[in-house]
Length: 366
Image (tube, rainbow, N blue to C red; front, side, top):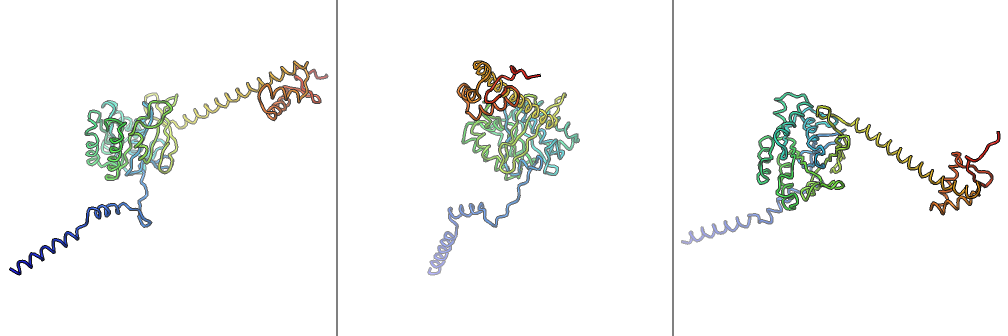
């Protein structure tokens, strides 16, 4: 009987000791959080970029990124160039930083015929064989799917395909409302977790707000994406049809701008030289317009000066002309003095002694 009681006490003590030895919920949580601490001894791998432009990396692996622009501004065309660069190694000025990567392209907006053009254009640009393209570029049209399943379906496909780069052309279709802050934050968080879990770069396409002067991405979804994105590219279509691609937001280096356009058959081509030519032409036009405006102002001031000279019977003291112009034109004395001196140098006015005359009325001796 005594041994039975003793055995019971030993068992009870063991249970108590085991319970004491078990970590509390607080201790377990702290242990988990400690795993996220960064110290002076923490070794961090340098960012690995999917693409680069002139040596500046974009679309880091393990992170989320954005591509924005107005409606029909060329965002899908930019994705085609990026996909072609990843498969071929380089397309125009866009260079792949990966070796034979697998690319996953999801379109939630266009019909199948339009999505097929992604593959057709990539094939045209790269000249690669069908087998290679099909094994490295996985294109899906998912516009029939509901936002209720899109995220889970995306995760399922990423897990199956294991791509290094994911293009989501139509991020807005992943939520019931792009103005729902809770849904937007949860979606971006879920996508970030996919980036980290599979080590891929996820590039999300989202429209800018409709107002011409508002370049922010739409709604709370756009706000959260811009906050979390490592890189945000922007597309703008200029009057000539050139698509200008810039990098308004980047966590590290800012990508140099590049340009694409279409040839007569609708295929994409490098438009950097064309764009630079347009920039120079526009600058020349602006310079010519500013010069014409300056000349008009000078002529208007000269006409006022000549009016005062005529009122003074063809000859007026310089200090009097200066005072009249200061009052009439609401200009400072130094500005008026400089103007009169310039008109004398240009031969528009003539000075004799301290008097100013209209040079067109001066008869020089033969």
